[in-house]
Amino acid sequence: MKIFVLLTIILFTACSPDLLKDNLLIEGATLINPGKPTEIIPSSYIYIEKGKIQSYGALADKPEGLAPEKIINAKGKYLMPGLIDGFATLNNQSYANAYLYKGITSILEVDGYRRGPFYPNADPGPGIYRLGGIGEDYTTDADLISKIDSLYNAGYKVLLMMYALTPDQTEKVHAHAKSLGMATIGELGLTTYKQGMDIGLDAFVHTTRYSLDIAPRDMANAVAHNPFSNDLDSPKWKYYSYLTQVRKNDSALLKHAQNLAASRSYIMPTMSLSYLDLPDAKNPWLDPVATILDPEDINRPADPQTGKHNIDKEEQKAYTQLILNETAVLEPTYYKAGAKYLSGSATDVWGTMPGISLHTELMLLHTKVGLTIEETLAAATSNFGEAFGWKIGKIQAGYEADLLLLNANPIDRLSNLTRIDRLFVDGKELVPETLLKQAP
Image (tube, rainbow, N blue to C red; front, side):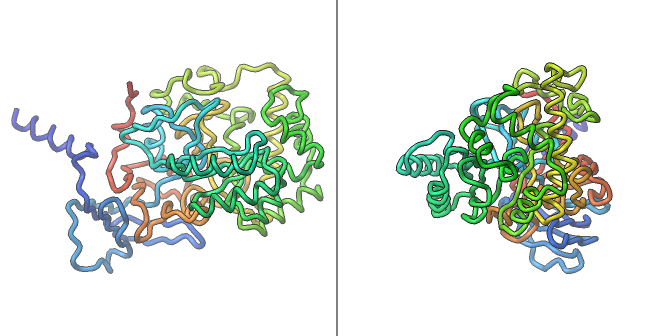
């Protein structure tokens, strides 16, 4: 009986974030710091205090005087920053568990409309950087500035700048957001993406949206006035049909790719939105973490039996043609020109799923678009710090202690990202197996 009680206490202590120590030392792992170039330290140490990285380096160079309350021997394992999902929602505790189980330690959280309300009480949960939209419909400059102030005062960190903003308004809105320290992402319409680049937006989201500069301007303006219709005769779908006809030697495509590469703006394709429309797509409901997710929570979920959408053949054909050209022509052209990438899953619209769909996105970036594994890892980690000026996504003194400890090297095989021994969010240790339970 005493042995059972002792084992229970030990296991509870190891798994409960409430009982973890503030000062933590992880030593012996091969450290992988994605970037340009990727930093690799074969036998490393990292020292954490109060959720922040204090120092790191080669284990042989570990400084004297560290005072860890817990030491983790990670010899034979691989340590890297936690993954970041740059466009995702958090609606309930099961979503939070799914993100964490798949190694996602931070999300840029977008909610409302099809994605449902934000769930603020996740425990445990990923770090949250809330994203709020502006410019969905035309309004005055004064109203735009007032809304930005309201979002900022409510704790939002990211401003999504949308279709109805005129070029003049885009410039004013961006300047005001930046004066408050907010990140800016464009999903533009009346403002061209070249104008957005020149203004200095941090990033653009969705291949199908930031490719508007390829289309004739009257087509782009029509989309800006009616961007969301699912009618195959709508301006959006006439534009999507146009995109399926674009080839690699298209002069407008090549010019747009050069503009993206020359700008400081990053792009976030969210190809995972259309992953299920690819002929070779796998059923996401077969992923182990899907057992804690409810199809009723997800916008237009895949059929759990087939892994496909239950839509009519004409609509399915249109979506399939679109994603095939996105992955074969549009994004490879942007990448080869030198565009800079961020990862985002768009969860949970059109069947995208928390945790699962970010790994889909990373796979598509690597196998379809052509990013190297190192570049793909950077798109999900350090590039966010570069794009937005945040201290996340990198192992560096003063940065958030959001980390993955892996049982296999992700540079050898991207799928090794899911072979998680444990993860750390703000320095708090979590064991993946404890997350595989559906929250109430």
